[in-house]
Structure formats: structure tokens, C-alpha cells
Image (cartoon, rainbow, N blue to C red; front, side):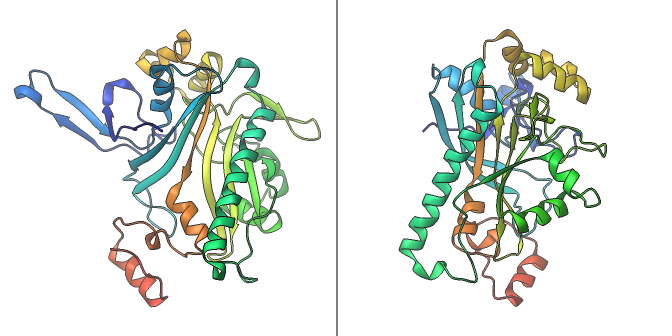
Length: 318
């Protein structure tokens, strides 16, 4: 376990831009420091994704070693609803890997290991509070299933992205969507992903051998309380020098290669890693059968949302 920063130097390039269209920007402020003689422009982190790769090097971690953090962030451009908050809390993790482990099978092994932990947490919660487990609200399935974003589009070509997720989760209640960020056959990615941390460009293959893309993805489950999709974690094998450059070319951001974080990847100074973040409040909300993040997390919500919850008997923490 290590400490994670809440603020970072804007010039470091270590903050997470969350996507690649520039629509979700971090909170930034100027630190005058000695009457502006030695100022710093700082940002509140939106995620610790890139910082963790610096950290494993700083701590001298070798292959198979890694770190966990209690990450706290602020994402001011989120739309606030039942499972999105400006305040973000995650169990973030990062592990050093070898070049040979940069493959789809290693990604799946890691996802299955995380899934076993999530199911174990559910069993613990149910043991402490048996009333949580009812026929109305079934538990998590024993196994998680894997689908490429490209395969999901093929199944539901006429549905937008979130409706595709809703549709497949009603058939398969726990899935890992592979390759989020790669542009699909309809001309759009399944969801926008930044070009400089997860690898969504590497060629892989579906179970039937068809070519697919990406070494990253999300764990989603069907939430029987909200009757909606429920994302628990975003994770992936991180870019190497080759895939970083290719993804930045695709997104028109090659100028980022001048930033310290990106130079560290290109030079090989930063190790190859896999990592992700598991939503703390998201997981607690699911396991405790809550209908809103505000029932397990104290943050800010619009008055209209709190009023709507009150009429439904949902107690939003103040």
C-alpha cells in the first residue's frame, strides 16, 4: 500500500485526461509561491493511472511486484446520476510485467483473479447481513465472461453503446468488455479512452480466431436493484513505446511525446505494467444492494436529485 497524490504538477503530463476529445478537464490552480518567483501550476488529479507507473519505478519494484492505493480524485465534468459522482474513490493498483505478458490471456487471468476477490467480498457481506441475499436480488455469477467491444457491436448493431451493454448484461450478467477505445465498424469507439495509458490498439483475436483489438477493458455487471448496467472497474495492460506512439498518432496528440511521462515510456525508463482502478463506492453500492452512490458516499449532489431520491425512500448521506 502506498500514498497517492491528490494534486500534481500540470507540466508533468501525469494527470489523466480520461478521454481524448478534451471535454473533461481537471481542476487547475496557480500557486504563487514566494510572490511568483517560483510558482507552480497544479491540478487536482482525475485519476492516478499514469502516476502509478512512475511510482512502481520510484519504489524499485520488479516483475510481479506492484502497488495498491486508496485513490481520491475529482472529476468536475461528470454528469451526476445514481452511479456517477464528482468525488471519485477507487482501489487503484499497478503491477510490473514482462514483454511476454503483454497478451490477451494474461489480461484475462488478471480479470478472473479480481473477479474472485469481488465474489469473495460479496460472500463476506452476505455472511454478515444475510438479508442482502434474496431471490429478488441474486448474487454475482461464479464466472465472468469475456466479449470484445467489436463482438458486442456485431450482436446489437442498431443500439447505442450503453444500450448494447444493457442488452448483453441481461443475457450475461457479468462481463469484461475488451478493447475499449478502438474505433469500431460504425466509426466510433465503444467509449472514448485516453491514448497514453491503456493499450487499445494491439491486435488480438476473438475465440473463433477473428482479428480484434485491445488489451484493456471494463468489468460490468447487471445491477438487480437499479435494473441497469453497473461498472465496477476499468483496467488494462499499459502502452509500450510502440503502441503509445501509434495511439497518439491516431488521436493527433504526438506533441505529448515531449512530456516527462511519455518520454519515460518511449525511452524504456518506465517499466511495462498492467493496472486499473476498482470503484470503492460503486462496489459498496452493489454489494449492499443500494440504489444510489449517495447511500454509501458523502459528496455533493444537486438539490433536485436529493429531492427525487427522498420521494423514493432513498437516503442520500449529507
